[in-house]
Image (cartoon, rainbow, N blue to C red; front, top):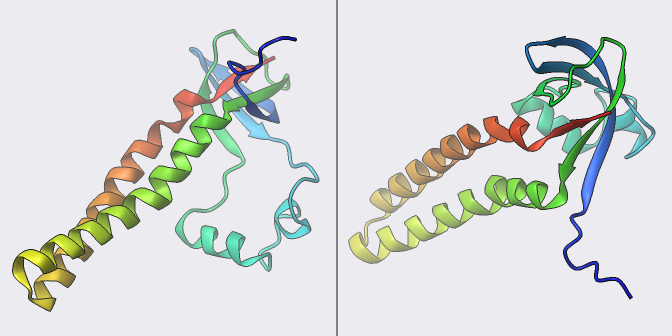
Length: 148
């Protein structure tokens, strides 16, 4: 029986090359029938998750990604990302800011005992962790592979 414990699970999405210059491919994601009807139809009246996400960043269907091989406009490709990368991204987006917020609030309250300082430090640490996470997420394109 083969050992599949080292197998990397990947998530892929079909896309079409719009442009290719100097190793950078501009690709447009293909809309498929996956997910709920509201998201797949790009309706503004979709689920709460779509509406909440659209407040902070509009959905992107065009990406500029490094490509290992020259590509032609109109060529069909797949964008592949390892599921472990998505798990790390989700943890850094959700768990890290909450952990920083809670730990800074508890530590400040234990050390100072004043409410206004606890609220100020906890809120400041939450904003700082958000900015750090946002900066780290800008490098997500290095984890996406363009495959023919």
